[in-house]
Structures are given as structure tokens and as C-alpha cells.
Image (cartoon, rainbow, N blue to C red):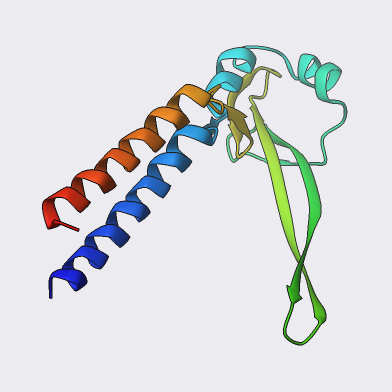
Length: 153
């Protein structure tokens, strides 16, 4: 019974360490919408065209203005390969997914931008930190050692 409890606790501990590792090494992304609103609201449609070129498409906004849409549609192809040592074979899987990034500029009848909507992401700036990784690994290793000591293994 003691061994089962130990194995369950060890599995929980290792999964929590994995989560902490991902949190400290992966960048966080935030929407670009806020910063784009700060930059573009109040500016003219001609400023937008000078910066981004002609929109992909335009539509009415329902208030006598226009919504000018800039889209970037692309297909991402991923390939993964696995080696089967027993059968002496190589398996390759390919998958595709379509990504659509867009930015919508809402322009009033006078030609002034009043809203920007986007699904584009910008990096928050948190990058891989060797210090955080070493600290996290040390805490996980210490917890495993403490667990061994508590269970008398």
C-alpha cells in the first residue's frame, strides 16, 4: 500500500514540475488589439493604407462607415517521424492546418479610424530563463528527496 501511495505522489509531483517548467520557459502572448487601438484610433484611412497597403476586403460597418480587413491566410504543414526499432521501420505523419490572422480597421464616414480589431498576437517579452529552470528543477528534486525521506525509502 505504501508503495502505491508513493508512486501516485511521485507521478503527481513530476507532472506539477513539468507544468512549472512550461510556465517558466514558454513565452506568453497577448492580443495586439490594445496597442493597435492606441496607435490607430483617430488616424485617417489614408494613414492606414500608407502603412499596410490596400485592404484584402472592405465591408459596411452599419453606421455609414467601412470596415477594412487585412488578412493573412496560410497553411502550416507539420511532419513527424517515428522510428520503430523492433520492426526496423520509419513512420512519417504529415498534418496541415490553416491559420487566419486578421486586422480590421473601422473607419467612420469622415475617414477617421474609430476601432481596431485583430486576432494577431504579440509577445509579452517573457523568455526562457536559465535561472528559473534551475530553481524549478532544484525545487522538484528537493521535493522528491523529501518524499523519499518521509516514506522511509
